[in-house]
Amino acid sequence: MSQDPTRSPESLIRGDLKDFKSYEPILPLDALSERSGVPVDRIIKLDGNENPYGCSPRVPRALAGYAFYHIYPDPLHTELQGPLERYAGVDRRHIVAGSGSDEIIDLVLRMFLEPGDKVINCAPTFGMYPFSTAVCGGVTVTVPRDDAYAVDVAAVRAAIDGHTKVIFIASPNNPTGNTTPESALVDLLDTGAAVVVDEAYYEFSGRTFAHLVPRHANLIVLRSFSKWAGLGGLRAGYGIFPERIADLVRSIKIPYNVNIAAMIAVRESLADIDYLQANVRAIIAEREHLAAKLQKQGVLVPLPSAANFILCRVARGDAREIKQGLETRGIFIRYFDTPQLRDMVRISVGKPEHTDALIEALSPWEGGPDGR
Ligand SMILES: Cc1ncc(COP(=O)(O)O)c(C=O)c1O
Image (cartoon, rainbow, N blue to C red; front, side):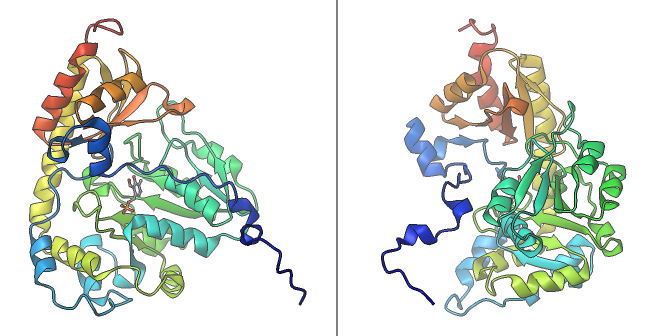
């Protein structure tokens, strides 16, 4: 083998990753505090679809009492299998847990993609699909949703060719908040591509396709503990796969992908479902309350949502300016500068007092763009 000691390490890097555009994550609390000059305990964080009620109180108690952090975790997370299958209503042979559903997205793509294979992305949607596709050497084929942000099934079908491996459908979709009907899913399953339905926000919609997985060899459903169970910081999610695919996912994942703290947190969350579901109900009620208040105020026009956030069209003022204006008051929302989401902002549902603070902070725009 010929060797070249003068070769730079950079020249060894995969060509397609050299100018890689990284995923833009939301900022952590202390960075938001520094940026706005508002102390951490007064920040109103409505930009990450996080749970304002936090996690079950059983989680910190169990974490504080655990004595074996020096021992590696169980790679098959055996103790979670029973609670997960009862919660998801699907046999444990179909379920694999991960470090957030983000990890499962990556695992799915690593499993299916060879360089140049295609992944269909129904935009606007969650940014991790094109990100992980690119990291895995795949090509994202963007199929825009229609004017009501519904998946354009005919356009998806038309976009499929011999290199198409995966179709991602988030339901409810982030950031648009709408779900995809079963009839559309069935049409997509007929194509033979792997259809990944991302149900990170399932608990706020009550609509799931998990029960269909055992009957379809190409359906995968992703779930998260970040939203309904308030475990975003601990990273826990799971995938529901056809049995053979689940076996393969288990065999290609890194062994200790779910750490002990996340495992304890999931176990305790699933032992405290009533508490967590009461918080989910409070968030759903607050979603409707927030939507009604925004509608009445007229600065932001809310779109219907089946998730824990609301996408809004800016009716008065400018989206970027409103986002920046709210930031000076310590209120953070999400603003997207893309053609399909022009003049739109996404607001995560908080507690009632967060709604009141937001509405009050939006009041300078009530008189129109020049009303301040
Ligand atoms: C549609 C969707 N899927 C998955 C995720 C990631 O979830 P997790 O925290 O479980 O990785 C998010 C997070 O915002 C999301 O919006």
